[in-house]
Image (tube, rainbow, N blue to C red; front, side, top):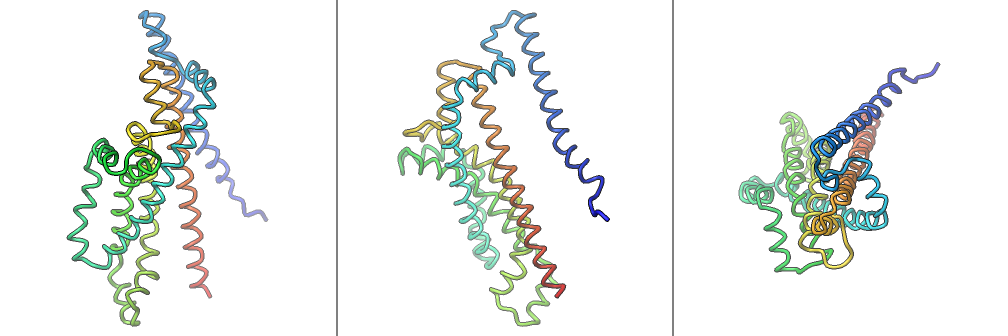
Length: 272
């Protein structure tokens, strides 16, 4: 007898069809508004491009868009990887020492309040322009959610479980690896999901000020603004949005896979 659930396929289809339907509805509404403004109000069609004009512009510049997207993705993913590394390590330290946490956590919060433009200017003065500077800005912008979410997960432990580990004479390392880390994993993944969007934004904004060489999406946006080419500008913005969506989707899928694998192994181990 098949174990396939009848509702699972419907759920999978609806999870894709509904967003696609909303996207088509928004594109139709966009085209309708543009048609009204251009034909009824006599506004310049170049200032209000419709979705088809944006698609055509994107196709014309597909080579530049592809190269720029790869450069921005490389900077954002490198910055995100560094923020995961340093953010997780910082959260581990915060979870082990309340004194360190009280002393340094407010400065971690400051990372979220410093304007990204100010960060870019400081990086220019210290490191100059280039790929490494863009990566640094992306890392700084995406670091805060990693630190806060992971710290929260490491600290929100059932006190009874902590007492149980201590009764069994668990070391601090065993408490961290076998109790705190598994509990914090969903929080860490949630933080990475938030940070992935911030990393893309940080890389694009960093390219506004720090690019020195091949053109990323941020530099491409600047060029289209300077040339006042609205269809191509909108095409770059759409591609940047798609890049952020794809990165978030990949992070979400990998996070769900990791959680299933982790807790699946845990359950299997308990069942033996």
